[in-house]
Structures are given as C-alpha cells and as structure tokens.
View 1 (cartoon, rainbow, N blue to C red):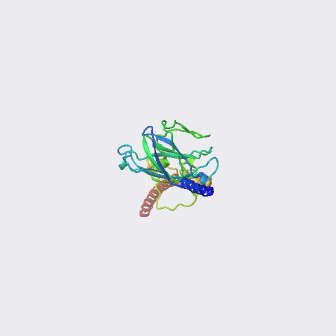
View 2: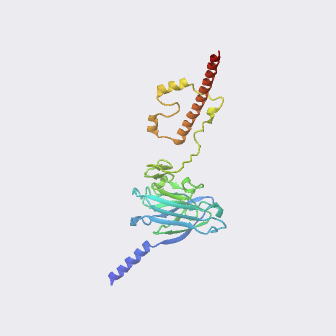
View 3: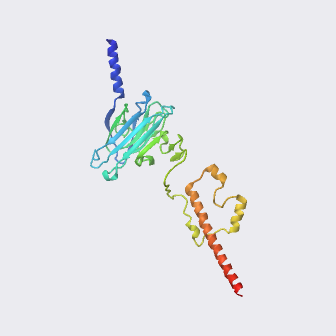
Length: 300
C-alpha cells in the first residue's frame, strides 16, 4: 500500500513540475521607465530550456490605449560557467496606431554569470502596467520597481541594475533575437558564438539588395568643386611607382589585415572615378587643341 501511495505521489509531483504555469504581475513606478524584473530558470535542473511567454492582449489594459504586447523568451542560464547559456527572444511590440506605448520591453540579460541564482533580467515598462505570463516551469518573477522590491537590483557577485529610460537598439523592432552571450545582447552572431559587431556572419550572405546609410564617409562630389586641387598625372604616377597602389586606396596588405569597409571603399573608388573623369576631360581638351593646330598647319 505504501508503494502505491508513493507511486501516486511521484506521478502527482511530476505532473505539477511539468505543467504549464500562468499568472500575472504589475510593474509599478513611472510609465516612462523600464524596471528590472527577474525570472527564474525553472527548467535548468531538468536539463531543458525554460519557455516564458509575456503578453498584454487588451490594448486598453490598465488604461485607455495603454498598448499591447506579445513576447516569448526561450532561455537557459549560465549559472557560473555552464556555457550552454542562451536567451532567444521573440518580440512583437504594439503598433503605434493601437496604443500610446509601442514598447514594453527595453532589454534583457543573463543575471547568473557569477552566481547560482539561475535568473535572467527583463526590463519592463512601469506605470502600474499589468503583464500576463505562462511558462513550462516555475519562473517566480521578482519586480524591482522601488515599491515591491527596492532598486537597484544587485546581481550576486555582479553589477547593480536600475531602471532604464530608453529601449536598447536590439529590442526596438519586431523580430527574433538569438543571443548566446546574453550579457552582450546588442551583438548577434550567425555561424559564430563570438559576435564582435552588431551582426557578425561567419560565411556568405545571399541577398537581393544592400542599403547603406551614409553617416560616415562623405560622398566625394567635392571633387568637382572649382577649388579642388587635383593631383597631376605625374604625381599619381610617382605615387604608384613608390607605393604600388592608388593614392587614398588601402594596399592589399592593409585590406588583408583590417578587412574591407564597404561604404568607405565605395566612396574612395567613386572619388577615383570622378578624378579620372576630370583627367579625361582635361586630356580631351588637349587633344581637341592639338587637332585644331594640326588642321591649321595642314591648311597652310
């Protein structure tokens, strides 16, 4: 009989541990601030990721036209040095047409890099805003809004975190964010687990078009200004003989060492093309002048 009771107990506790958990919480503070809310990685001990869904279906929740949100976080934390850690976030912020607030999530990160707390942080908009959640394991949200829990939130053996007033760049737009190193969330890697830029791709990129915003190098139309000092062809020839590459164009060794910056290189090549056009115009004038002189000599 005892064995039978024990078997029922195991089945019951197993069902509770693996059932979907759902509840809600409210983030206080100011509406224009995002406060750290920590979530426990309940699936860690079961060797599986924790799946957390955050939502606000009703755009009028808490106040008229407050805004809506759908987001999922699939995560597995570090806990000191267990490097299967990741936070995969799929964010669906509201359209500005349907609510005054288009962003409810400002950032997220792993908070267990130097401890065994097994928690991640998600910065959520305050102002007595209600969030509904569902998870496959217990996540036990703790809200650090200065009301329910004091600010800042202090990671064990780690930094302190207060509210944010702006949304991090990676959390602004709708999309899926695969983040192996959650504490460097602004960098995303494809084919690499060590992204060193906003987007690092290890391999080829196949696309139909690439658009580059010209916030860096100037478009070299200044070459056509009247006061532009164009090098003589003799100066260009002397430079090439000495350096084995064009002026203002990096050498093969420099490119091999530092890579190729497409926007910068395209502007440099455009500048050379514009200078070449000026040389051609100048040479054409000389040729026309010679032709006139030959024609005069021929008539004489």
